[in-house]
Length: 172
Image (tube, rainbow, N blue to C red):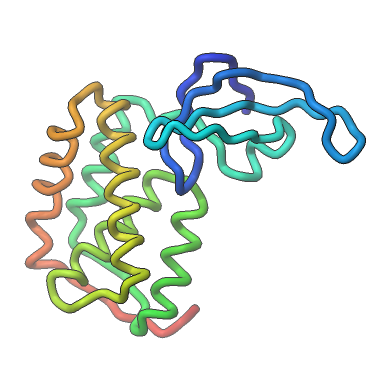
């Protein structure tokens, strides 16, 4: 996938950024083209090689019509989670790294449910917070709504979790 200057994109685990420049630089003795990406949340700059953009999961923001699909995932009452926290953390980390907002929604839904029923590990709590941030930031931009409204939609979607059907498994 190629992007142009000014495009808003999602950089997995970092959130939304803007392509500030596309530049050529020497790297390890070879000329390479890079996207110069400014992450909106913390105003940091990230350089992503054009040839590696797909590999790191750089992608366009979902379309407005896909916001409802994310909300439907959050509303879903079926959950399939690993029994122990280490296995669960590994599975969730893999999902977060994909950069897919739909995978992030699954992680958030599962961890939010678990957090209401037991204490999460420190690392899982941080992942829950990160997943919420990623959801709120992308849904607000894609749905052209305030972050407060995005948070309300997410919270409302999770309201039905009290009757969730959770399946625990032990596979990796």
